[in-house]
Image 1 (cartoon, one colour):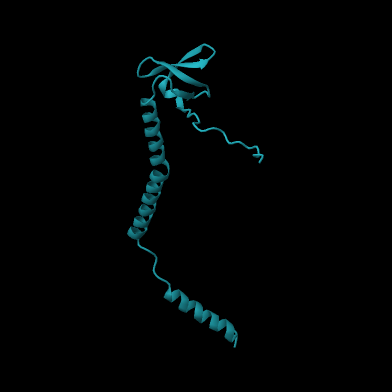
Image 2: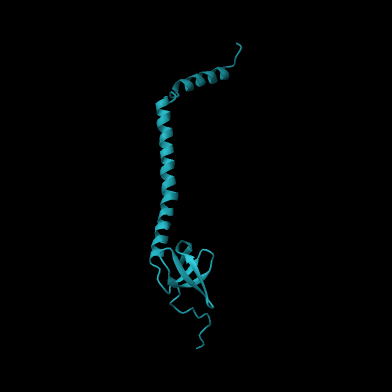
Length: 128
């Protein structure tokens, strides 16, 4: 006998295992799976990136359309001021303080600065 019984048993199980493996998918099945994964990636890209950006754009546009004289704003350059005059649909005159007034494009305004209406907290202990 030239081969051991353990080696022969291992060969038999290997042959049985290859006989039980499923066939490779056809070309059409592979194509459908690949297209399905690509479609899933496109949907995820839209939901995770495009929808939030559109929502931010709509909020910014509505904020710009609701601006009026006297509103405190923050420009894209980081300047904080109040709207002194609305020149037209695209420009506003911004008062930065100390008599400094600049003309800014509405699209360069980043947001409204909301003033605190409540008093700051008193951190000192009350003496009784």
